[in-house]
Amino acid sequence: MKILMVASEAVPFAKTGGLADMVSALSINLAKLGHEVKIVMPRYYSIDRSKLKQLPGALGVPVGCGGEEWSGVYTTSMPGAPSKKPVQVYFIDHEIFFGKDGIYGIPSEPDFLDNSRRFSFFCRAAFQLCRKIDWYPDILHAHDWPAALAPVYLKFAERIPASAGGFEKTVSLLTIHNLGYQGIYSKDNFAYMGLGWDVFYEAGFEDWSMLNMLKAGLYSADKINTVSPNYAEETKIQAHGFRLDGVLRYRSADYSGILNGIDTAVWNPAKDKYIPQKYSAKDMEGKAKAKEALQREFGLPPNAKVPIVGMVTRLTEQKGVGDLFGPAYGSAWSICRDMDLQMVILGSGDPWCEYEIGSLASRLSNFRAKIGYSEEISHLIEAGSDFFLMPSRYEPCGLNQMYSLAYGTLPIVRRTGGLADTVENYSETSGSGTGFMFEDLTPSAIYNTVGWAVWAWYNRPKHIEAMRLRGMKMDFSWEQSAQKYIELYEKEIEALD
Image (cartoon, rainbow, N blue to C red; front, side, top):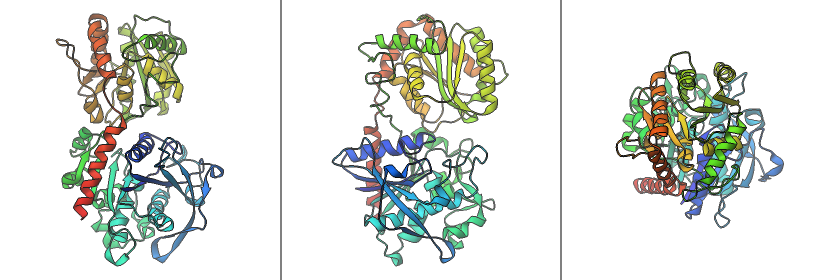
């Protein structure tokens, strides 16, 4: 199959979250399975043009009111893709739209005012790129709201018989990475998209007198999926649907969940270049070395007998930080005061939370934190911790709990989204399970579940060891997930035929 990934991010070129990892990893693994994959994304200011190859000629992109925008196109090969089936990455170069700091915004303007125009132009440019290189995909795979208009353009402008544009046999898939971000803007921007007002209503743009780009994509895509089976079910109910649960119930026959994989070449204790000593389920000595190194890195007294609870997270409400670091009893203050453990945090985000974490670190001898992000320290936390805490309000897929299991670090998680799909709750009687789970997101639930894990550490050490080994033997590689996407693509093509 010929597959075009339309995405606003892809590592190593631009990244704000897991979407970038998924786009690149899935593309590489689809290529390894023999498919022809190309990625199209914007050329942001941070992406150095001197390291890319420019395609000759400019790209003309039709926009509203009979107008046209022009852009350049650059290209390179995706690192890590097979040499026999390279994944070519194409960059849409438009200085006004993308020649600025930030992907979606900057601290002083978190959501650029022209985002609807930036990404509608990008989506339309994806079709013009295919014409320019004379390559027409079987599958157009769009990712999240910035690419959600690609299925809209395919359905209402490119695949219609009168267009004869080469996309008559192309089918679309829209992947939801996080339903909380939808691309909602003033409907005054709609005219620029070059679609008639009949399409505004037929494609589902209307959202309380605004236009909703993700909603239109959900109505227009041939198939929809999200990044875990449980999150697919959760988003069809009001509590987790962000006002789009009705749309997803309406499209339920075309909506499914496929769990993301992890890059086992990078997140693998037997290969990890960031930890003091590599280790595996057959030889765990390296984990003990990592624990000691982690304690020294954070200024904690080295002690193999005391459990370490680690976190690597964005400090936002989605990640449950309000309940963990707020003033209520059961918060991190209570956990570290009442329990014989050590806690280490790496993350950044909401200023109030960064301040509170700094305050806790100054008052508690067993709590340490680093504000910001470090790839090396994140690997050390995964390897050196005994438990990994993820009290997420919602979690479409989650990667850190899978990293943790691969490193023999037991997750402590809320039962939601992909966390529920990947972690099996501990049983005190049988010793089965791979982690510790709670239902309601409250400070007392977090406190009690961390306490439960610490109790098992001191009272059921054989259970802890068995759970570690069980988690390390689980297969979260991208090969399985890529095969499921292939099956979904094939069903789409069959349905169009």
